[in-house]
Amino acid sequence: MFDAFSQTSFLTGITLGGSLIIAIGAQNTYVLRQGLRREHVGAVVFVCALIDVLLMSAGVAGLGAAVTERPRLLDALAIGGACVLAAYALAAFRRAWKPQALQAVAGGGAQPLGLVLSQVLGISLLNPHVYLDTVVLVGAVGARQAAGTQGAFLFGAGLASCLWFAGLGFGARGLAPLFARPVAWRVLDLGVGLTMSWIASRLAFGVFVR
Image 1 (spheres, one colour):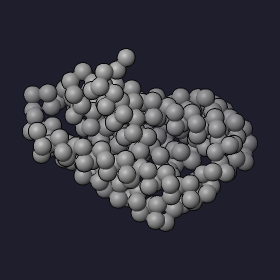
Image 2: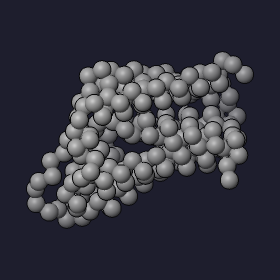
Image 3: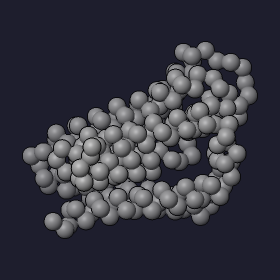
């Protein structure tokens, strides 16, 4: 059972993880496509979620260890993370102003599992933004959590990733009509922008108000 501090860290983790992953991009489009095709969906969902969890864990563990004896470095990372989150929030608000739609074509012949996995690995790991989001940004926020609550934070962030990919992949046929509507993305992006603004303000508040 989580205590109050762990519950706060869990909430921060799940909202941050969800906010970072909900965006129109190659990875989400690919997962949706495989879901529509009903082809190797479990493997694709597992690999995408595993990559996120491993990179976020490496970020929190690595940055947490690096800043244990360097409080000023921790403050610098917090300010940097707050600035990045503020920029992401602004981008989300701009997307909400002119919403797009997530669409994926379900046609084409069946593909072997090896080819599908190589494609999803390439889409996931060759995108430099994935490292900024998971290793650096999630790592910086995770390192700011109260002592002993990083596990709850990581659990929340990892859970958000797993739930998103599972819902997108296994619920593709039901979700595709929704995600094809710009108004749905307007609502999502507004929520993402507000969430990122909230986390950014908490990071900055933790540095300047002690």
